[in-house]
Length: 136
Ligand code: ZN
Image 1: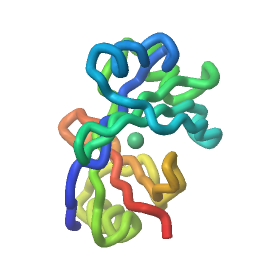
Image 2 (image 1 turned 135 degrees about the vertical axis):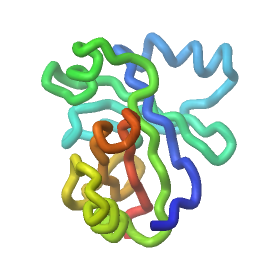
Image 3 (image 1 turned 60 degrees about the vertical axis):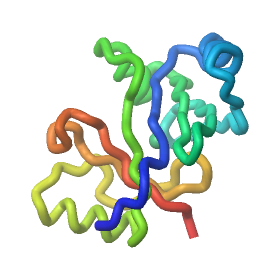
């Protein structure tokens, strides 16, 4: 697997509207896209920090994975997303062969027209890990 960079950090929030003034008015970042990912039951907001993006994740219903994360006491950084150069499907097959627990057994479509797959934090030093690449 060839990881080229950190694509984004996912940050779990109760409300994008409530926290956006911090990111925009205090840190001086600019939200350039808000997108709902129905599949994941989240609303996302994206900001660029150099080459890395921040992805704010707001649950859209109570059984959203983000709602569950926060209900279990989680807050703040939710996942790290690495951009892979040789395909998410190839990367999943490789980590699977190395005994890493997968959340997604096949790539699926995420926000920003990316193909993504999550690895289980039990296998990744406690850090929920996303592998991603632009969809073709
Ligand atoms: Zn993400």
